[in-house]
Length: 576
Image (cartoon, rainbow, N blue to C red):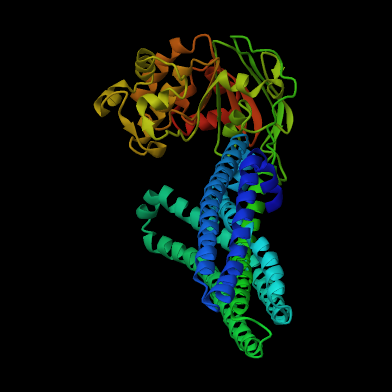
């Protein structure tokens, strides 16, 4: 999974990658040449007292070192740019792909894990790429080159490599095998931490209202402890790895000096060659240690790559049509024809056999008991979900055959839980229409009965916190309604959008809304009878089935389900 991800997203960076490889090769060759020059200085200069040789070879060493430093700096620069660019591209790809998800895919993954995959998981892949470009390209060159140069210095003494290298490889394989499942568990624990923290921040009012602070502290402490336990397990293996590698390196050094000293003593090896051999062995072992460092991170990056690819490989159930139908007309006739919908894995459908029409210039209301499928039905119109049976038609065209941008641009949705973004009142309203003038914004606020409190806040440039937490629930609903009005769509969808308003504001808003929606198709989902009693058409849902369609007067006279809903809110006289 990791290699697949890297192959796909490193294609645009072939030239800088080539530059990194070339620079690392030059640096490695220079690094391998330095011990040889050092040996020559000792053997031919220091041992013989020849100052000219020392100066000449010393100058060469300085030149080679300069080349090594320049290539190293350049390689790190290009490597860092490629690694950071990779992280940027993968994050953008995950973000863009998540934007195509329907509500079904978003519900399947959940916000906490999508946040972790877009940030922490991408960071793990980015880190491994960074280390690979700055260390691992040079490591095999140094290892192979070090072995060749060590054999060139003394073949018999090189036999120590037959013990050291397999020993290091065995330690590495053991550590990677043990840490891989721990890293997978660690990423899941991070998901849990994010989910718990998100729930506690979002639901802080409920927590305090029910005095559940201590319970939530314990729940977060449990999630935190689980992550700590797994992290400690990983830390133990990492803590064990480095001392083990250093122990092997130091024992190798002792062995080389011991056996090399005897060979120098009997004249079969020169002192300079022994020092050079020792340098090559250290280069080999350092290369192995770099490999150990990287391979300790690779398992976690592999798990992260799997999680990233899982998101990228998930296709949205709401798929744009291959050949979209023509552009919509300005008057959107809406028809819901024998619609059925069931959630994944559900035994029974939420909606079944739902049919009704909504005409431009009319208001169609949907009412029913809790859980009857009102919001689900509304979500099918803009294709937040796709129907599992039947069709939803706009201007006689199945919404699945319309280009998504064309469909969405014709709809002004005010969801059941209106959401405002961090910014200002103006920036939130211009989500409906980017080039809306201040006059258009104020007009929409007037219609939504929001202009008074917006002026008190400081006008259009008044700040709005994330989620709209800086305003009340009723103010948030009115700003969301104003945002839809600014768009001036052909179809208005109000999902219980007046529930937080008092009766006076509700009546004033609906009265002002009438002229604005005169030529549009309006669908209103509501619990309050007073909000929808004057609708041109009322659709009564009962357990996912249409129990009746008509005006308020018609349904009061003929539909028992509607009568029960009405009489649960008002008296018989008020209903009449």
